[in-house]
Structures are given as C-alpha cells and as structure tokens.
Length: 561
Image 1 (tube, rainbow, N blue to C red):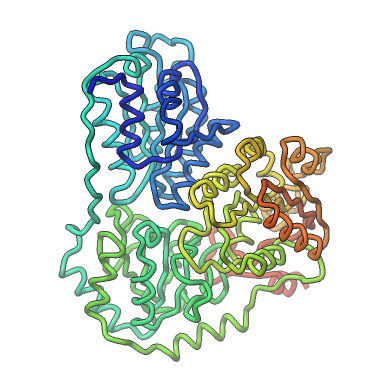
Image 2 (cartoon, rainbow, N blue to C red):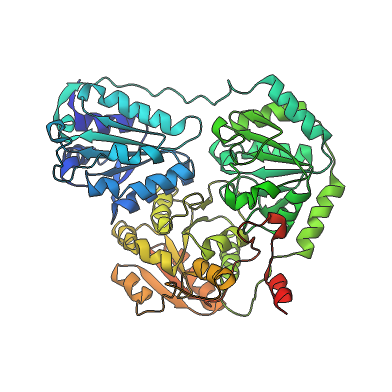
C-alpha cells in the first residue's frame, strides 16, 4: 500500500495499539496532524496548553496504564519544550515516544526558521533518539522506537522526522509488533544460588523496593517473597505501591524523608535486599555510611546500576519478576519474628506526628485517603506536598502514585494527572501541588476543562516555596532569599477563569466537604488549601548525614532547648 510519511506514522501508531496522543501542532508537523485528523475515531488527540504539558501528560498516561505514552510537537521551540518532560521520563524509567518534525532535509543545518537539532539536544536524556531523513526508514524507525521504549529498563525515545519525509510516499506493509521478552539471559543459576544463600544466612534481612518492581509487574511475586523471607519492607519514592502499604511488614519510605523505623532498620540490618532500586542520593544519604552493618544484595534489570552508587556483595541482573520467581522457588518459609517486632517497636516509638487541629498537608492527605478509601491515583508536583503525599497516603497498589522522583520537576503533576485520568477513566485522579508548582503549569487546567477531564487539583498554598524555605530555615540562618510568594495571585479566580470549579478552604471540615463534592461533580475541580508557611516535612536527614541520623521536630526542639 502506497502511503505518505504522515499516514505511515499514524498507521505505525495503530500497529502499536496507541489510542491517545498528547501534543501541539505547528508548521513542520502539519502533515502529520492532517493525517491524524482522518483517524480521529481511532486515535484521540489531546491538545495541551503547552508542549511541556503534553510530555508530562504522556508520562502520566504511561505510568498509570503501563503502556507507552506518546506526544507530538513541531520543530524548534515546540520540540525543545518537550525536553523537560522527556528528561523526567528518563530519570524515572517511563516508556514514552516523542515524535517531532523538523524542517526539510535541504534546510537542515542552515539555521532555518524553527530549526533545532532536537535529536542531538535530547541524546543525553533519552534511551535513543532518531532523525528520519528517508521515508523508506520511517516505519521501521517508529517500530524500533516503541520497542526500545518498552524493553529492558523502560525509558523515553525521540523520533524526529523531516517535513519532506512526512509528505513523501513509499510502500507501507503492516506489521504486528513482536512481544517484548523479559530480560532473562543475564540471570545465571550461580547468581541466584548466591542470592538464596545470603538470604538463608541472614538473621536480620530488610527488603528495599524500588520502581523496577512496578515496571516489571512483579508486585504479586514480591508479596510472596516478603512472606517467605518474613522481613520488614521499605520503599523508595518510585517504589510506592509496589508493596501494599497497609501490610504489617511495611515500615514506610526510606531516605531523606523516610520514616525513622525504615532508616534505623536499614542501618541495623545484616542483609539489605534491594529490588529494582538504584540507590539514589535521596535514599542513601551519606553513601559511605549507608547500611554499613549489612551485606548488599541487589536485583536490577540494568547492569549499569550495579555497584554504581553502592557496592554490592552479590547481585542478579535481569527482570525483577523473573528473578523473584527463581529465588522464591528455592526458598523455604523463614521466621524473623523477633527482628520484625524490633522494627515494629521503632514504628510505635517514632510515629509520624502532626497537628490535627489546624489545616496542614499530612492531615489533608489522611482525609483524601479516608474519602477515596485508598483507591485514587495520586499525582504530585515536587516539594513539601510531594513528601506529605508519599508519607501520609497509604498506597496499596502499583501505579497509584505518579511523581517526578529523579528529576524533581516542578510543574509535572497537573499534566501527569490529565494523562493518568485519560488512561484510567474509572479512577478518581487527584494532583497534589504546592502554590509554587501550580504557577509553573497551571495553564493545563484549560486542557482539562476543554475536554472535561474530571481531575481534581489540590493546592497546598503556604505562600512560599516550602521545601526551599525549609532548607533556608534549617541550614541557611532563616535567610528567605527569593522564596516568598505572598503576592496578589488569586488561584480560585484563575481556576474559574479557565473553566474549573474552584474552592478555597482553611479548615479540615471545609476541605472534606469540598473534596466530596468535587468527586461527585465529576468535572475539573481545584481546591486551594491555605496552610502555614512554617510547616515542615519530618523526619529529615541533613545533607551529608547518614540516614540513621534522621531527626524530627521533637529532636529539633530538644536540640534547641
């Protein structure tokens, strides 16, 4: 069948089962949008307010569904506006294909209007980037892009297509995508046996769960592993929901804002079993002091992560699900009740404390959990509200917390919330934002109202850049340089101006009423919550300190008294 390049792009998307594209048109990509118009009954296009919103929406769609997210942008500034979203997906291993179009081949390299080498720009923040200058290579390149995005450790891929290729014609032959095989050829019997031996010899094992467990759909096998080993479980920010947060073995997040139970337990264990986690600096604190009493056993699909940040004593490289299956098959039921009780005693001795008489972030998250019965998908921006969302909402299932963990992208949440809701229509989807983050990409509210995508945006408005101010308060002598946001912006009026239903609340009973109504209305809603600028996220680990040195407000008060 003879098709032009634009039609081939659309047909390749259909091959891959793509049902939604997030994007923004422009001159160089007009041919593609013209072809997409003819297939609007098969592929839904969501016109975002900004290209960055499109990349975040595609990311949120991918995280919520497990499928590849797709976004479009035109050449030049359209393409460069995708970069932050692409880098966000790269840091958090999210499968995403970004398709951009460029000037015609004869105009490349001539500083032509809206010309940017976007393949070169994105090379450091993608698994792979392509530029297609020959229509005969187009279909295979699109197919390769989707395969690369999904296989092994997932990640973003960029395909840049010159405008003349989108207009040229060639023969197109439909292909059925081959299934993506799990990475198993790197899993050796010797490595599995060594792992099993370490686990059997351990008296005080601890399990650290990362986002790789979610990516490999390994939650059920992880549950069996935890039951067999009978060990306490902590998670990274990206691992939230991989293991049921309501399970008695669960002790909370680990790291800079992890629970004392998790931080102290990891510091005391004799074997730390890390599954699908990359030992980021926010998890380890001072790497030289991290889990210093433990042997380290690491399961990960990416060989590059082994011994990169933390030296392991043993490791197995491969798909997390397959590794856990093989290890579980060799393990008998173990009993570490005394060790587990010791960690539970920590949890009882050092609970997460916060006031219940005034509106604050932890109390709001507790109320969201209660009202949604823990069945919502929570997206977040980055800052104090992000940590409160991680600490005070119990994630029982994977793909229910979508947040920028690696890049820490302010402005991520609203676009991701829209993408998640488009991908999972039957779930309540709520974005938790700070006032600083809301300013970054609040224009995406117009996207939600344009398509009546019933997301709920909750703004924790403390009138400051909360997390930065917290550091200024604790480590910079209370010099609040450029962190005060107490200006004239009225978020309720702005939200209403973009067509959303908006509420302003100052008490927890007002918030409860507003959230229940927002869920019932099933339209785009915004709830602005006025909270104190001096509220802080605790526990906390100081920069450069060991996670065993985590402190909370009581520790701070005792130190200063």
